Image (tube, rainbow, N blue to C red; front, top):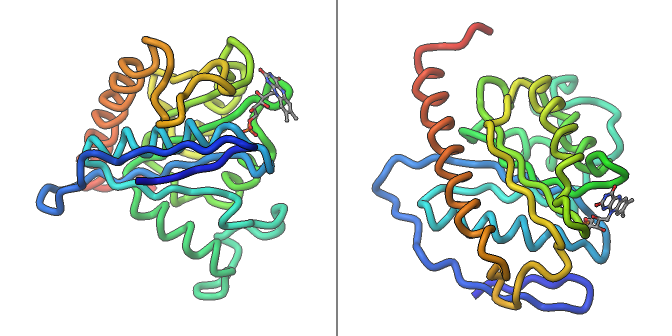
Length: 215
Ligand SMILES: Cc1cc2nc3c(=O)[nH]c(=O)nc-3n(C[C@H](O)[C@H](O)[C@H](O)COP(=O)(O)O)c2cc1C
């Protein structure tokens, strides 16, 4: 049983299907982009982590509250080998291990949260030739899609083009019950289809990367 807290609420959920160690696994870095004390998007991020794990996918859960990168001074690539701060080194390692990046963004003034942009900007080649997928959320009915559209442009520039589908989560304050089950009939099937599409791209890119990359 896993427990998360937002504001005054407590959410509990089970990760039902255990990851089997026999099959060759897809690894995803899931990047969440808020450090607010009363952040709501953590529910979306944990829900998607659970959904990925139920599909036998390994997940690196990247919470900027845990890694606490400074405002960008030096990018990871600007450090000579072995001299980058530990948090940055750990992130780079997880990104290198990943077959794709699931980015969970809130919508701050119609764009992405600054902490998410700051996290993304620290790295570059670690993302290259791997697909990304965008999940967004907001307090209102549009589910953060304006931020998602901005994010798609950024992820393309970073060398991790995003898959066609996007997954918006509207009304984030009341979307989930205390067991992290979505309280509408759209989210579960949309998330399933979204993850299936993402896996297809990750497998296709992984197979092709094994033949080499242009740079
Ligand atoms: C600085 C700021 C700007 C916001 N701008 C928008 C916005 O443009 N559109 C929107 O739908 N919600 C907006 N909101 C409301 C957010 O959707 C809501 O607070 C959400 O929970 C933020 O994500 P977080 O709790 O994970 O930080 C904004 C919130 C903040 C803090």
